[in-house]
Structure formats: C-alpha cells, structure tokens
Length: 433
View 1 (cartoon, rainbow, N blue to C red):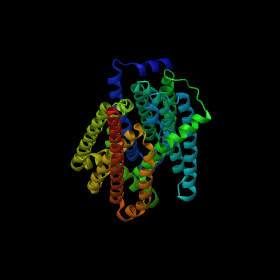
View 2 (spheres, rainbow, N blue to C red):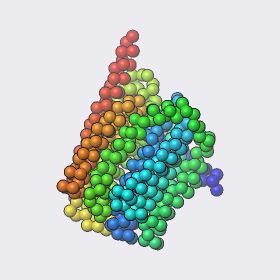
View 3 (cartoon, one colour):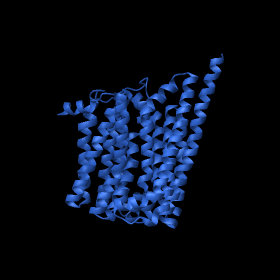
View 4 (spheres, rainbow, N blue to C red):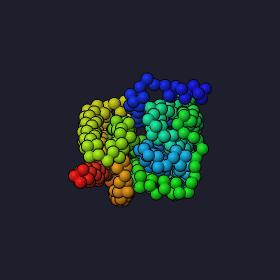
C-alpha cells in the first residue's frame, strides 16, 4: 500500500505544470481548511465553540513557526547544499520538540492565568500537535522542492489537509463534541503525515537525522533571523485575535475570524504564485551576472502588480457580495461588518506584500534585517492592541491589523529594493574592470 501511495504521488506527465497546478490546489485547500471547519462547527456546535476553535487555530499557527524555525525557504534555496538533508532533519526534530514543549507551557499558563477551561486548553494543545505534523512534514517538502519535485510535496500536503478536514467535520456532525472531534483532527493529521510526506520522502532522502554540533549551531544561527521574523510576523498578523481573546468574548472572536478569512486568502493565493519560482530566484541571485539580477528586478515588479491586482479584486468582492456570501456560508448575520471586512482585505493585501518581500530578502541573504523590522512592529502591536480592541471592538481589530501590515510591507519593500539594487551596481562595477 505504501508503495502504491508513493507511485500515485510521483505520477505526472509534466513535472513543472504539475508543480504549479498542485501548488495552487494546495494553497486553496490550505486557505479553506479553517473556514470549512469554522462553518461546520458554527452550524453544529454554535458560535461559542467556533470562537474557541478560532483562537486555538491562531495560537497553533503561531506555534507552527517554532517548529518550522524559518528554515523552509533557506533549505529549498540551498542549491549548493551547505547543509545536508540529515542536518535539516535533525534540526527539525529539535524544533518540533521545542514546539510541543512551548505549546504545553502556553496551555498550562492559559489554565492558570487566563481562565481557560480544561477543554479549551486541550483543544488548543491538540491543534498545536496538528501544526507540529505540518512543521515536521515541511522538512521533507523542502527536500522535494530542492530536488525539483514541488508537485510531490504539495500533493502530500493537499491529501493530508483534506483528510484532516473531513475527519473533523464528520466527527462534529456525528458527536457535536468539540473535544472528540479535535482528537479525530489530530489523529488524521498524524496518519496523513506518515502515509504521504514521510512515505514519499524515502525517494529523496535518508530518514536518519544527523545531530552534528557544528551543523546544528550553524542552522540555529542562520535560521534565527528567519524564525524570529516569521514568528513575529504571525504574532503581528494575529495580534487582534489575541487581544480579543484577552479582552472580549469567544463569540466576537468567531465573528472576527469569519470576516478575516477572505483577507488571509489573498496572501495564500499570492504565495502559490511565487512559491514555485523560489529556486529560480535563487539561481538568478547566485548567477553573479548583472543581466540575471535585472531579470530578478523584473520579476519583483511583476509580482508587485500581481498582488495589487489580487487585492483590488478581493476588495471589490468584499464590498459588493462579501458580506451576503459570508453570512450565508457561516449562518450568521454579518451585515453590520461590511466596512470591517473591507479594512481587513486591505490588510490582507499588505500581508501578501510583506510575505513576498521577506521571501526575497531571505533569498538574497539579508535575513538579519528582518528581525529588527518585525520586532519593532510586534512591539507596536503589543502596545496598540488593548486600546484598539477595547475601545473600537471589531473595527479596531481590523484597523490595527491593516495599519501594522502596511508598515511592514513598506519597510520590507525598501530593504528588498535596496539589496537588489546594491548587487546590480556591484556587478556593474565589476564588469567595467
């Protein structure tokens, strides 16, 4: 059976076309995972449980970045294999262990100091385990992408995401029990991981991890700016949700997440457009030819326009049919939140820019600048959150999100353009000698 699954994941007539197609499908399935579960939960268990799931998913997504440690982009663009897969594998086992430990500490803290019930803490922890499976699978996917088989990686993720959602939805309908359904979600994730990513990974790497001190130290040092920036980026993105969890109610949490879903989709769709060309960017950058750097600049300009177009389309849909569609989907009257949805959509476009520019900054190896950018904005988010959310409710959360994302996008664009332009000028001087 395992061999049959591997063959199915490997099967393709055109690797490049398959990579684009499955990357797109994977982005869509990933974007729909939380909304579909939220939809089913709201109709089966009510808006309060939907709010618990929403904050659990947000916290688990933050913890995911502890497990990932920001190394996927570094690994997939490590064309000269400075570190072997066994090094990346060993590092990922360490970070995933750290992720589980931090998640456990967070849940215990929530029970002791944030009035979390035992059920809420367990739901959060189990969804953190689901995200830990995602973090672990990512090290195999990075290797597949490095070897030119992004299609196998995205097929694996797509199958697992679908399996997880079906398991959660079916158990919600059958039991109406949040705890049992979340356990099924976790079990489906573990089984899906073993059958797809780990199973398919044997064609691209040796399973046995390496824990060489100098290699782990190197990855810790090189990955830290990426980890810190991505972790802080997710904290900034979800800062309104954490503020709602602290100062408002689970019902309001659910409503905010319902109007937030379309905005996050803009970033995910933008991701699937530029993820397949990461290795192309790396090759252009490493070419040491000014003509190739000029091509890279052209790619950046095109992506800038693509994200602007996606944001404009998303904003138009949000203003016209967004609220009626969301109200119908979730079974909740969201009529009073039209302008909040539009404000959040603008923030989604800014997040897409910020994610894209941080990716390019990683490829051109200026990632040490990211931690300062994200650190400053994260501090601003912490300072702003209580005032905005307590005084202005959902509109305050939406406005804070968009302002923070816009600041990030502008700063990261400036760093990206400076780095690429500087390299272009350097190669120009060399060509004249």
